[in-house]
Image (cartoon, rainbow, N blue to C red; front, side, top):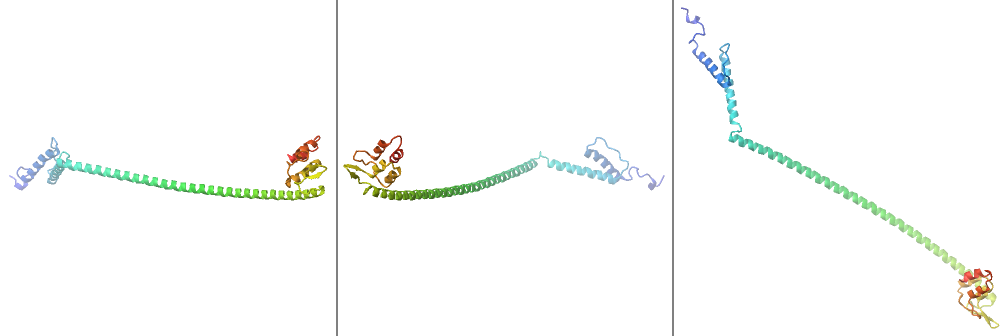
Length: 251
């Protein structure tokens, strides 16, 4: 017989605790990992066997945690539902905030556009008003100029007429004195005949004197002793247009 310390270590019964651990490790590993067969270990390492058991324990713990957080659990379903509702509410709130921001931006844009339109309208109204005022001022100036021109022309005509009447009166005065007439309205009588200064001017075929007498106030409707007006006397004396200028002056 050999001494017991020389016997092989694998002899049954020498390391009962180690053998039981190895068997436990081999029996737990397939159950935990879901394997149908056990793979043989090349060595019986307690550390390795312990790690396997720990790994299995970890997997079991994870599986248990997963089972507890599974949506099938009522509490987990309620929590998941609440989370979904919170997400939906957050999204809805963000959408509302975004919509409100866009609405405010649109309102601000519209306000700015209204302000710009109002400013443009004010500028346009001012431009039109200034244009109208300028046109009115220019029209007033033109009207004033036209009025001044008209007044000047009237004054020129009045002065010319006044000068013509003055010259005509001087001519008439000389004629009346030369022909023995006291006034233009009093006839000159001789041998039961009566004639007026205008009839005498017609007989002399003096169109200038006829015009001067008329300008000085002579009456062209007055009749001589034969009952003829100065125009009728001129027409009777007119031979081949000889008294045409006098007729025109008396017309």
